[in-house]
Amino acid sequence: MISAPDRAYAIELIGEAVNSGARLHIACEELSLNVRTYYRWVKLARDNGNVGDLRPTAKRPEPANKLSDEERTKIIQTVNKPEYASMPPSQIVPSLADKGIYLASESTFYRVLREHNMQHHRGHASDRNPRPLSTHCATEPNQVWTWDITYLSGPIKGTYFYLYMISDLFDRSIVGWEVWPEQSAKNSSDLIKRTIIAQGIKPPLKAPLVLHSDNGSPMKGATMLETLYKLGLTPSNSRPRVSNDNPYVESLFKTIKYHCSYPANGFKSIGDARDWCSRFVKWYNNEHHHSGLKFLTPAQRRSPFWREHLANRKKVYEEAKKRHPERWNGRDTRDWTLPAKVWLNPEKDKLDKNLLENTQCSA
Image (cartoon, rainbow, N blue to C red; front, side, top):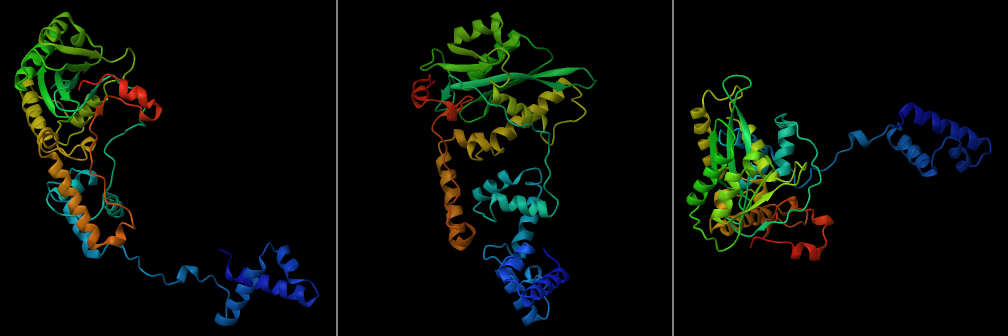
């Protein structure tokens, strides 16, 4: 903004030039000034006695969709409750909707938290890399399983326990897990057998059950492969030197390592590790609102009532929109629909439609 003394001086110079016979628009051009701007400054000087910029002191009406102080206070009180203290707004808002409560949108939650210096990133996440298309998809539970093994820190630096974990691609639920002191194909084989029994799957299978993993020796050992063929499971492995071919399990392991109750100093014994994993699996399957499931829990997604959960959220949002339609600015409420197919590593923007339809699907 041009200061008031500079404006007054410009008016004085232009006035002297015009009185000396110069044309107004030429005098304004010499100062890189528009004629309309000159007239506006002259009018300000005549009406207000100065030519200062009035924009900083202008009175602007409050926006109609602005949150009230009471609503902001309610948001802060809610996110500080024990049950929401470790949850981001992207999980808090759907969780409240399940209880028939709508306070504000997720973006409003984030904005209010930033204003109160309460929004901080918990990790050092890097940009996502392009992912290749997988040849498997799932349309219901127990069609595609993904699994892997991760380290759990032991009581002494350099000692580890090994968490074997199997996740269902369709509903992200953890269907099988175990903690052992070593990695081996035999342990993997035993876990697969127990998981098949726990899920009530009886060979021979009516449809192929794909078990996807990376290329580690416990995944490709002779004992493991013999078990898969005997049970009728279809083995699937990541491509060599492609680390992101099994992203769902890697994401699950990150959730494990960043969970607020994960011991930073490691587990004292393998028994402690198994007890903690048991509690985590129960929480993850029944309480964790998964972003890939429209923030349903895996148990809700697997149940026959998942549509009712999402329909109830849609109703809550529509009622909130009726109370404050100005906050949506003519937009529709949030989309609470889930896709019928879940693909492993799809690159939809690079796929030909016919290729997508003809790719093998476990359904």
